[in-house]
Image (cartoon, helix red, strand yellow):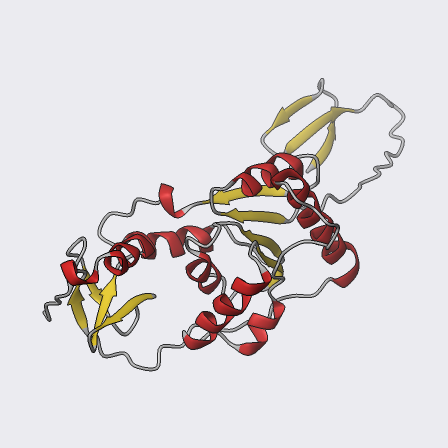
Length: 249
């Protein structure tokens, strides 16, 4: 807010008071240029590509935010639940998102994006692994429409090789989406078909997890096991004969 006064210029919070220098009660013309907030660019994961992307994007008009599962510590909830909440807390309508976890928690990251109107979702992956990730997403209830919105492998095909070059191709694609396409991810809400909990003990860390909702499962000798995070699942898969037990609670 801007007002005029006979006193010297002062400023309090969002109010700027300017002195009126014309004693003949003349008019004041104000020229106001609206400032639209910069869109959010959320980078998920810790990797060389994510680091270069953050550095390069700093030269563009974005609100840059970063999230990694490694840095999430949530009391009273699993690290995965805290990770999902952290991702969603950093989103805003029309945000641009790049998942660069290099396969560590790609599926978990993308699932957390459902239900938000986004301008862009890119996944750092190879063409071969892309199909595996999309199949996992669809098997876990992510819609075909949302999967088709994901840019994977991410970035324009410029023949980039090293992480810095790949980061530039990603930003080039983001600029193209922002300035030309202006498309938004389909808004889909979370749907849980079976609300009955099936609680089991994670055989690695002994945390209680729900088999109906956990994103991390594995089958061994006809039994289904649930895990709180991708690390526990991978540890189990490395030595299933050592951890092959589960406890219903």
